[in-house]
Length: 96
Image (tube, rainbow, N blue to C red; front, side, top):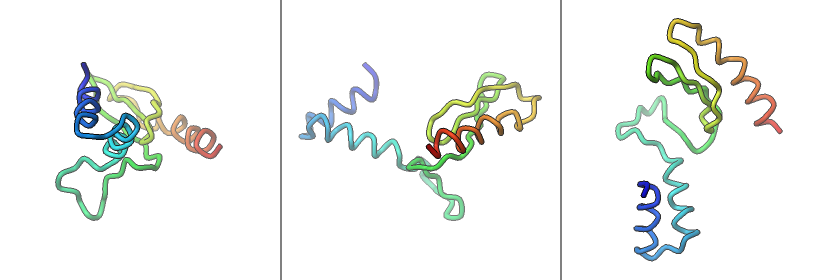
């Protein structure tokens, strides 16, 4: 059983119906996760389309803040590799 499934079950035991429990969990997913946020650079998951680059197992993974995966490359490659797919996503898929 996944942690998400356990949380949904706990919320239902606490009195939420299935729809209410899912809505509450979806809202929580969009809240900032930094316990000590920098007031000048607030984290947000509630919207936007920032380019997110994460270091994985000897590779760099890029995605959009909205969750769209944009690819991966090696750390010695230019980060510009991700610019074109991210711009295309923002200009075509999001604008539609």
